[in-house]
Image (cartoon, rainbow, N blue to C red):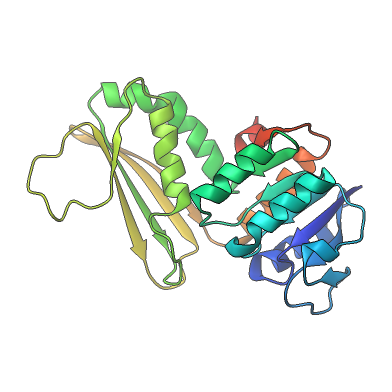
Length: 250
């Protein structure tokens, strides 16, 4: 049985993970961490430094401001980390990378299995399509309260396209100040914010007389919670290194 420490356990995503784990015979939450220490099916403390339970993995869906402390705690206790918090600074991302030299670190821009399958398809086929003259545009849509734009997932999808190309394309986020024909050296990335959209991503390959679109729609945040649980089970027992959802899907 895998024993998990869930950081951010009483947040929206933390509660979803707890619901999923409750139905999974292969993993349990040994202890939770949240500034809201409301009662749960497991002990809850308000700081990861107060955790006293032995565990195999930490899953973090907490606030970005607390991530550095979670990383350092995992390093000092030699416990793998599945880091799911979004909107991290470059400094924190670098800390994750550096810490992976000591303990297993898992970080994906999107924890959905579907998004990561699309990323794999993009990497494998982007060169064929761009060589055939297809332009690449990415449109992402999220709820009105999402703070960052474009989404980390949109950028990860753009990276997947570029990973499949010999000659990388530039990312363009705003064309309002220019008047010119679209060059073929760019990937346009557009963000839509409104309502309660959980997350929609379209990667559009626009060619002459035909358009190919790779689309993913998340109808519930549970898809991200399920991915996090699968990642937690995957990373247990792994040595130092960086891991992501591409490792889980194989």
